[in-house]
Image 1 (cartoon, rainbow, N blue to C red):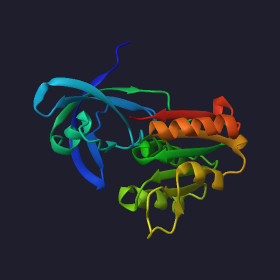
Image 2: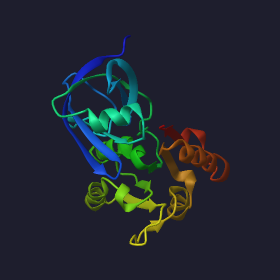
Image 3: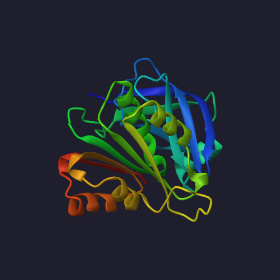
Image 4: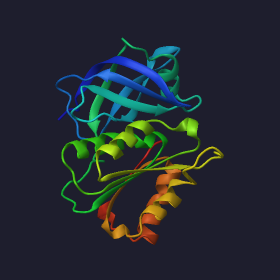
Length: 238
């Protein structure tokens, strides 16, 4: 069965952190997906619209929201970064394919949820967390969200609002760079996770972020924390 493709209408593109952009599209009525999935965008080079390659982005909006939300961390010289920063604007139409992926919550798993993300690796977790909470999920949900500096933070207020609204959701932020004005945890997500969780046997763990972080987290989970393979779900980005 062929993967569906869509012509999406861009409804916004704005910078939301030091090097992070959020961009939105009008969602076609026939486009359905599961929280945690991703799509492929056709991305042309700025100076050659015929030179097209696909780039993957996790859907950050929930299956119930009308808009499709995505975030991207800029990478110098990157094809998608150049497209997002200098070309993509409201009113543009972009071809996309999808959805793809099995990075979704198994709601039949009786264990609590632990999400671990760095930077834009938090995108699928916004979708998954909001979808779970809005559908009446009652087990504990912890989000460990790491960036380098305060200027790299985004969606902090939104996640804090969810933590106030739902008593089973907890937000934990880790800043790994030099941040003299930061009163929260200073260090990497790997160290913060071990402070907030003492019994990993009761956690269903989802990890998304840089390849270095996801590789190290997978090793820690399986070798030191003795997490069962069925309870560990890892997705990296480049």
